[in-house]
Length: 449
Picture 1 (cartoon, helix red, strand yellow):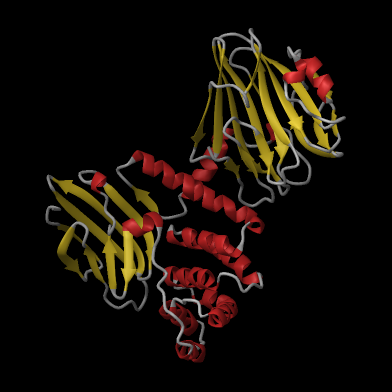
Picture 2: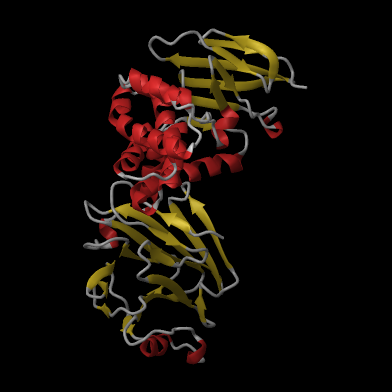
């Protein structure tokens, strides 16, 4: 199972949670594991079989459950922006068992020196963990940790630290009680967990961010959850663009634009434009032209025109395919008519920046035609499908499909851009014959074959 990302908007730093709740910052300099001392023995989440994990709030909170006698130990992890400082992870462990147990948080930082006091843990002298309630016991060093946790057969525990690069802190946890610590995912002060937003606030905050984009309602609950998870992941990656190469940045920008997160996509395009590179010229041109086509933003076209020219030059050197017509539209919008003419003279192979992923199933814009639900799935038949404010080259499209027996009823509204010529709206996957040039309307389509 892939690690879950811990991302925030507006703060440096990020981290990951693995399938068993091990927390690691993006730098990889330390890890935070969790153990539970129940009535029978110590249970290590990294080794127990009875561990399962799920996402809360589109993955804004990662919840990991471990079976112990009489119930579950539940770990929840989320990330927040800490008042102008680095991103911070909050790690909370709760007792949902019928009896009390102990919680041990074990920090490893290979090659570093750990120190523990009443307020938290420092790695190499830099504060990394903070807590509100001092632990009942805390030690540094593999031998000391084994002694504190009273692990049977100490040589087989796997606490292979050297000197002072392993530490543990232990708290007793009665039934229904919780303990939380905060961990820095970057560099800087680490606020105590009580000074940071709780899990519910983080879920609400991410939902507000997700709601900035196009709204998509599908009759498949699993797909609906994946849509939200993917969107949160894309938005989160804007906070760690330095870890992405040029092609990854281009893909991220396109995904964001396809789902209506144009301001976030512009941040990514700024990063692409700021990098001098000859790599991925086709992908770079696709990213810039998709943004222009889906927003019609002339100011952005002017700002990015130099980066577009650099990408065209790089493409010409290796005869790479170029989305010729979209590039021409961007150059003309930026007042570079001569450059648009020169592009034609290069006779480069032409490609179209076609839609990908879910958007390709929901809408396709080409020429003066706008196809609705071109990738309509058989499993959606009979269920409600609705799209609100999905960006297209012609403007924002909203439509809904409802069913009257075997026949789909289509309602649509195109919020056309100023000066937009008539657009032919179709739904060929549902009715091969029907089309309309009205920007708004409703119709009962033929029953799909």
